[in-house]
Image 1: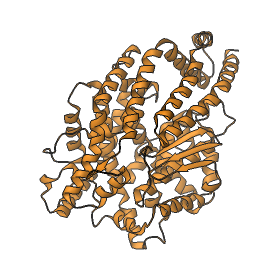
Image 2 (image 1 turned 120 degrees about the vertical axis):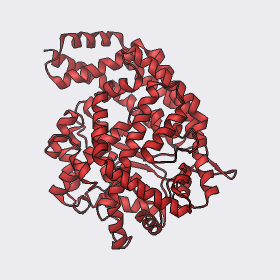
Image 3 (image 1 turned 180 degrees about the horizontal axis):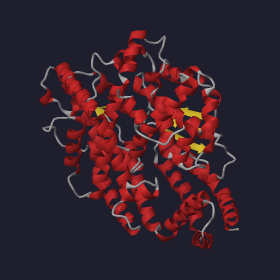
Image 4 (image 1 turned 60 degrees about the horizontal axis):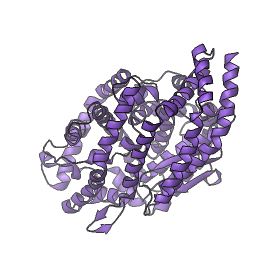
Length: 516
């Protein structure tokens, strides 16, 4: 039987792949926490060791023959198709693939090594974030904003070149551009389906968004003592005096306290973070990537978090979010076939985002802030959800149009979409802020996963709350998630998994309810 023949080939192949993949992931971790040339060479070397295994022409021939004859089991057929696709990519377009990888690594090296400067002094992006949240001095805000944009200036030209090269690759695969290629080949999504989903949610939230945006702009202009039409991008991000998050931040005394809050929230769900195989690198330092990531090294055995925390609510969101990825990865059944020992991007993002929301959905800040502040903070949640819809439309539309025409003025495109979706003044200056979005470099076409994840998380949380109540007040939460969601990995199809867990197909219903 062809199915059994494929299973034997698959399992034998991935037995060889797995240790090399683990080595590559660890080298990736080492580079992100310490972006030196030496660590860059190590990750290049170990990545190449993995990719060499996919250049076995004899094995590729066998896989092709199996794919042509067809398999009976649909899930196995999908695994075969995905595996054959990687072999084909490495054997038939390896030089172009290598050029793309090298270009991406070169850009990321510049991105990671860039140290922001304020008044000719080195700082970090966590501190810049705090400035933009709290500082009202316009000169200081302008400097902080320009320090962010400077990073975009450094890589903008290289990033455009990467987009062009990615498009060239996509066209060899029969696609109009790289956006459409990745959407279909990596996430099995149709561009029209995604656009319709974006439009559906945006239309349902349009009036709420418009009201929230108008109210926020008036309050923001009032804070700076200027007219609404005078607002520029460097004004945005300020936590208004009446913003509940600002009051919460006053109660967060240290970045270590942020870690304690997050660990306790997970402990109250049944996850003892200190006794799980999770490595944490949580605070800023030189040569370390400035964002937050979870590294899924090995199912059930090794997962890691890189973050740059400080004592603000955003850092609680970050750590709770990344821990969500960790516990998901650790909960996947290690007995599953290797290709199924992972999670669908939108589903793991849904879990992570749901965990990041806990500070505004449940009581993990109780006793740290007053009940009044906590209630206000929770009530503010719907505003952030509405703003998220704007962000998704903004970023996804920009990336789509960038790949459709990378030769256009991308500063102008970013500006025009920014005006449309976030409401900045049309008079705002053009700049390379677009090139500071790291996902455009390392995770192309990934932003749509966050959008779909927002819908999935709302549906998941509604179901969990019905079954368990507040999930951070029920130690059975961990077992429930492990047994009913995490353990399946990707052994079920994405939509099947969502429906099996929540009891209904994915829709925007639960998400739109959060805006009411």
